[in-house]
Amino acid sequence: MKRFLILATVIIFLVCLASSGVFCQSGEVTTLTFWTFQESHKRFLEDAVETWNKDNPDRQLKLEGTVYPYEDMHNNLLIALQSGIGAPDLADIEISMYANYLKGTKPALVSLNDIIEPLEDKLIMGRFESYAKDGIYYGIDYHVGATVMYYNTEILDKAGVNVEDIKTIADYEEAGKKVVEETGIPFTVVEVTEHWTLYQEIIKAGSDIFGSDGEVILDSKTNIDILQTLSDWVNVDKIAVSCPGGYTHSEEFWAFMNNGGAASVQMPFWYLNRFTDYMPDLKGKILVAPAPAWTEGGTRSAGMGGTGTSITNQCKHQELAKEFLAAAKLSEEGTIKTYTVLGFDPLRWDVWDAPEMSEPNVFTDYFVNGIDLFDVLLEVKDEINPTVITDIYPAAINLLKSEASYRTIAQQTATPEEVLKQIADELRAMQ
Image 1 (cartoon, rainbow, N blue to C red):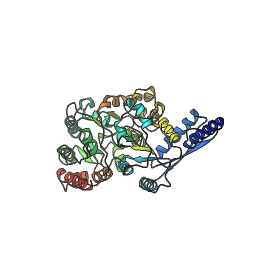
Image 2: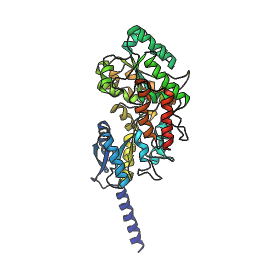
Image 3: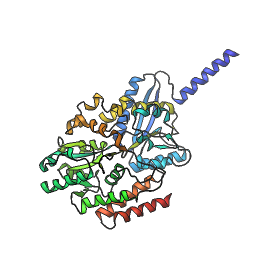
């Protein structure tokens, strides 16, 4: 009887392991479904599956990835999670939409703390807070998204401007005036239908849309002054122009910049591949450098944008999916590939000086300081300010896109104070 009970216990244990995905019989292939809105993210995880299958011959994986249009994917995923049926095993959720999936007391996503917390001392943890609630991490990004400045050295050389002399916003403005005076070319661009230009400056200055306790602080004096400065660059000082097409991901902007339309643009590190993909004529001309601080000795970067990969609670192989996600996006090899495959700044800072980061590739070939790109990140590693995400963060970003810079800079129908107070009041009414 005793032997029978022991045998039954062992059988039950093995069945439980198999059902959780921890154990697969040799030759068995487990399929994981994955939804995303980025083809490059699908290719990245397909590459990660190939690596996984080489390293785990007894636990083979197959990834069924589907790329949907941005709005369709997020809407369908939300419906599937709320209804309890039809969700994939893994899904990409863009950062400005993520708060929609954390509402309620029990999000329909799987906790990832046990694969993140053991690596805390090697990770830029501020990037994980954007996908967390009540101390539980639900998503893993592809990058840090550190803000940097991209300078066109051909234009700066004509104007006699040295990038190393630009430390603060005041220095940046002086350099801008010199470039415009010597070349007649705008020094920079300001987005008017997207939020990147304004939002980066707000975070870089140590401010935010929300305070640490969730209160709306968008209409703070710091933020009003920043929006006024951007407006002055375009409408008073004439060192900047409104971004052609309205934003830095428009075809109009890429053509403008590719033709030497402006001497600099501030965007996150992940914007590297926009240059290589869409601005080929600037190869050998663009220098990546720390962005200027608002004050002497102030912070020079912000963690911007992002997409968290999450495991849904409908996944039947949650433990296996977590192991795979950790290998794909948190291991040394996986995080290095976020740069070598995607051109992103890895979440693990301890790989930023790895030999692979300076080996020849499309990015080292394209940028003036291509082999030293990660020296720029190491210089600002402790100056990458995080963002505060709340339940109404998606609404806040939408209002910034549609109202803030457009009304104050493009239309000039409202002052920075008027428009930021109006948006802030709308957000407070939602709380």
